[in-house]
Length: 351
Image (cartoon, rainbow, N blue to C red; front, side):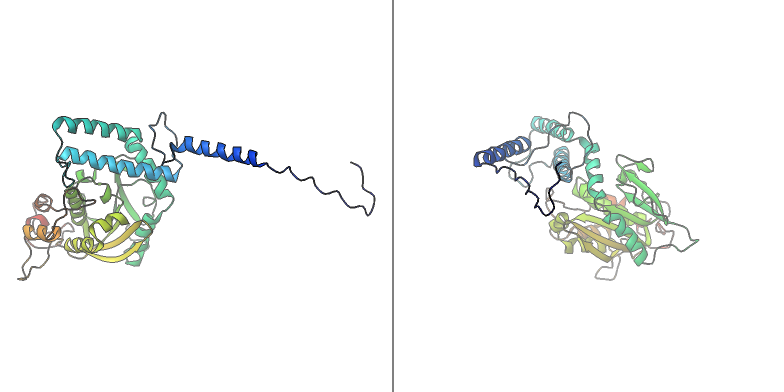
């Protein structure tokens, strides 16, 4: 390089040539074409069948997977239960139509990756926000349930464990279950196959984003009944639900149902899309709601109160209904003790 004489000014840097209007237009056109190829005909990109397994890293795709999985499985369950067409004016399908649609739905579920892909999407979405586990830890501490040094860990049931955040807590003795286990410490078990109340009592139950995945209204109601049966007196139920599901039944109605099942809501919180409830079991006899005459309600009266004067239609979004079976079938040989072994009333389902 040639040294500049002392005092000489350096030459200004050469400016890049200005882009002509035609060149800029071609660049924009190519960008639009690439976007159209990725998104189809300008609309939201459909979920394509997976040719081979690849890691799920996109939050947007994970949300599409979970939404489609819920949509397809809910319709499939309605077909299997014979409730297709109720409430929409189309009437039920014929047997052949139902079989053809069920096969189509099975293919659509596999096209988005099936339950394995759904779980992977759920892990990705919850991994961005560990609020469900933090909600458990926070309320165990604030409600005074956290054991002191030397005391035994709290017996905990985690339903639908798709990660190990709660399992890793040092003061909780966790039994984690899920339909399809992704971790060695998570037991592969359907919650409805868990002996009730034989598997209990638990001091803490975590039910995060699970009730909304249960396909039918009676099963959703039964899940809450089973949680009440498995939880010991004074124990904590951490219930996490999508806000759109809470709005579908109304938060007031959900609070009434929880209170009728023996829970007291001790704390609530919400994010833009999720509602959090911390409930403690206040009655040893979870069903023991005094009637107007001061007597304990019968199972028929309790069902009527839980369902309300206007039960939601079977196809209503996130409806919950309560039936006699789950209330009356939990009978053991000791009808005068609750799941904690404490004396209680003689109602058969309180065994």
